[in-house]
Image: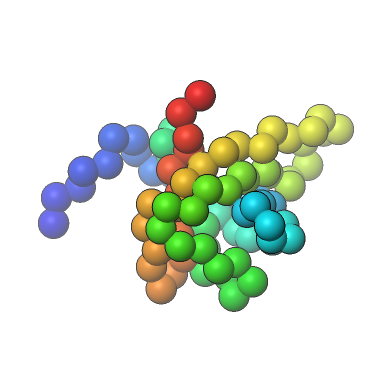
Length: 89
């Protein structure tokens, strides 16, 4: 199987808040991250489908600063979780 990724992934487990329009925010965990996106671990409270737009906000300690809400799009759904691609500026 050939790897077609543009960006290298780094294991990066973090707690994030995922917001989808018309849904309550859900706390989730990341498995890995790259410059282009992040993989969110499976979470029964987080029901996402291909193409859905969402925002991700890190909820780890940001030393008093408000973390940015990063817009992203779901690009892959697996039994283990979902891959989201950060939207371009």
